Amino acid sequence: MDRILIIDFGSQVTQLIARRVRESGVYCEIHPFNRVSEDSIRAFDPRGVILSGSPASVTEIDTPRAPQGLFTLGLPVLGICYGQQTMVEQLGGRVASSDHREFGRAFLDVTADCALFHDVWAVGEREQVWMSHGDRVDHLAPGFRVVGTSDGAPCAAIADDDRRFYGVQFHPEVTHTPHGAALLRAFTHGVCGCAGDWTMAAFKDQAIARIRAQVGAGRVLCGLSGGVDSAVTAALVHEAVGEQLACVYVDHGLMRQGESEQVEAVFRDRFNIRLVVRHADDLFLDALDGVTDPEVKRKTIGKLFIDVFEDEAGKLGGADFLAQGTLYPDVIESVSFAGGPSVTIKSHHNVGGLPERMNMALVEPLRELFKDEVRALGRELGLPETMIGRHPFPGPGLAIRLPDQPVTREKLDTLRKADVIYLEEIARAGLYDAIWQAFAVLLPVRSVGVMGDGRTHDHVIALRAVTATDGMTADYYPFDHTFLGRVANRIINEVRGVNRVVYDITSKPPGTIEWE
Ligand SMILES: Nc1ncnc2c1ncn2[C@@H]1O[C@H](COP(=O)(O)OP(=O)(O)OP(=O)(O)O)[C@@H](O)[C@H]1O
Ligand SMILES: O=c1[nH]c(=O)c2[nH+]cn([C@@H]3O[C@H](COP(=O)(O)O)[C@@H](O)[C@H]3O)c2[nH]1
Ligand SMILES: NC(=O)CC[C@H](N)C(=O)O
Ligand SMILES: [Mg+2]
Image 1 (cartoon, rainbow, N blue to C red):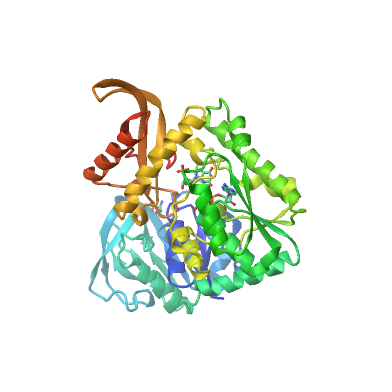
Image 2 (image 1 turned 120 degrees about the horizontal axis):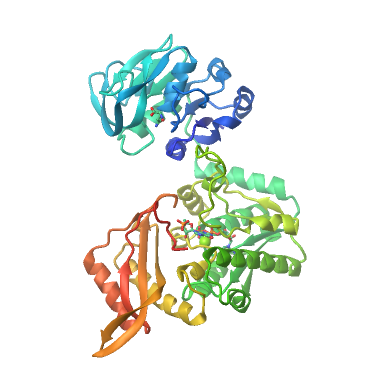
C-alpha cells in the first residue's frame, strides 16, 4: 500500500495535511519529529515525506530538524512553511527573520513551472494562498530554484525537480488556500507516484483481516453506546469474528429521553450481535449523590463503567479482548512546545484503565481514522444513516450538562424534556446534519419571571450548538432568531420548572463544547 509520511514539527494544522492526503486516496501517518530517524523512515517505507509547519524558528538554535538522512534516501520531500525553512537550512541555504510578516490571506505569483504545479497552476497566474510566518528563505540551497513569490516571501515556492524536493512558504493544507488540496494531490500522485487507491472498501477488508489475526479464537467484549464510533467498531469486529463478540450497553440513568430504547431497538433490529443491556441507574446516581465538582463526576462515572464492564465480562464467562472505538485524533501525539506536560482540561471518561484491571487486550480497529472516515466506513458496512450521522454524545452523559450542581433525578428529568424539544426543532428545521453537536444544559441558577400573571422563580436552560470537523475546535452555530425564539417558547411553555432560555455563543477555544 502506498503511504506518505508526515513529520510533525508542532504546527496547529498538521492534522489537516493528513486529511488532505487521505482525501486524495493515499494512506498517511503523522510522526512527531522527535520520534523519527532515518531508520524509522526506511521502516515505514513511504512514497514521499511531508514536513509540517511549526511555531519554532529555524533561526534559533535547538529548534527541531528533520533527520539529515532523510535527504539522501531518494524520496520526494515537500516542506511546508517551517518544513520548507528547515529543509533549505539543512541543505545549505539560509533562513532569516523578516520585518515583513504575513498572516492570513496572501497572494502567490507563479513565476516558473514545476511538477508540484502540474495541472494546477500556470506561469503568470496570481493565486490566493494562506500564510502564517515571520521567517523566510533568504538564500536557496544548491539545486533549488524559485517557482513562486509573494510580497513577504521572495522564495514562497521552490523546487529541485531532480531530487524531487519542493518547498512552499504558504499552507496548502488549509481551505483558505483554494487550490491547496490539488497541489497536495499533485505531490502525492504526480511527484510521489501514489496510485490513490486507499479507499474505505480496501480499509475495511484489511481491518477485518487484522482483527481475525489478532483475536484468533478469543472472546471480545465491546462497550456499545449508540454512538458512531462504538457502532462501527462493533459491526467491524462482528464481520471479522462473528459470535466471538458480545456487546454491553450501559444505561447509567444519564442518557437522553428515549435513548436507551432507541439504541436497543436499532441495534437488535439491524444486527445479529449478542447485546447485553445493563440498567445501572441506581448504581450511578447513588454514587453521584451530592457530587458537584466536574472532575469528581467524571471520575466517579469512569470508575463505575469499569466495574460494570468487569461484572458483565464475568457473567459472559470472561473475555480476552476489549474492543474500543479509539480514533486517530486520540492517538496522535502532537508535539507540545509549551514545555512540560500539558494541563488536563477535563478527564474524558475513557475505559482506559479497563484492560489492565481486566487483563484484556485492546482491539482498536479505528485507531488510524478520523471521524468522517469512520462515518464512511460505517456506510461501507451498511450501517443505517441515522446511526452514521448521529451527533456525538459524551460517555458521562447528562451528568456534565448539569454544571456546578449535583445530579438529581428531578433535574435530569427537566433537562431531558428541554433537550428533546430542542433536538426535535433542529430536526424539523432540517439543520441536524449541518450541526456537529447540539444539546441543552440546565444551569444552576434560578431567575424570576412572570407566567399567567403569576411570579415564577425557576430554572434557566442554555442551548448549545456547534460546528466542528473533529471536535478539537468548534464554532457556535448561527441559528436565526426566529428559530431560537420558537425553541425558547416551546421549552418555557412545555417544561415545568423552566422560565428562561439563553443561547451559548462561545467558540472552542476559549470555551469547550460541553459545559463541564
Ligand atoms: N452507555 C455506554 N454503554 C457502554 N459503553 C459506552 C457507553 N458510553 C460510552 N461507552 C464506551 O465508551 C467509548 C467512548 O465513548 P465516545 O462517546 O467517545 O464514543 P461513541 O459513543 O462510540 O461515539 P460518539 O463519539 O459519536 O459518541 C464508546 O466507544 C463505548 O465503547
Ligand atoms: O466519550 C466522551 N467522554 C467524555 O468524557 C467526554 N467529554 C466530552 N466529550 C465529547 O468530546 C467532544 C469535545 O468536548 P469538549 O470540548 O467539551 O472537551 C464533544 O463531542 C463532547 O461531547 C466526551 N466524550
Ligand atoms: N507556520 C510556520 O510553520 C511558521 C514557521 C516559523 N515559525 C515562521 O514564523 O516563519
Ligand atoms: Mg458517545
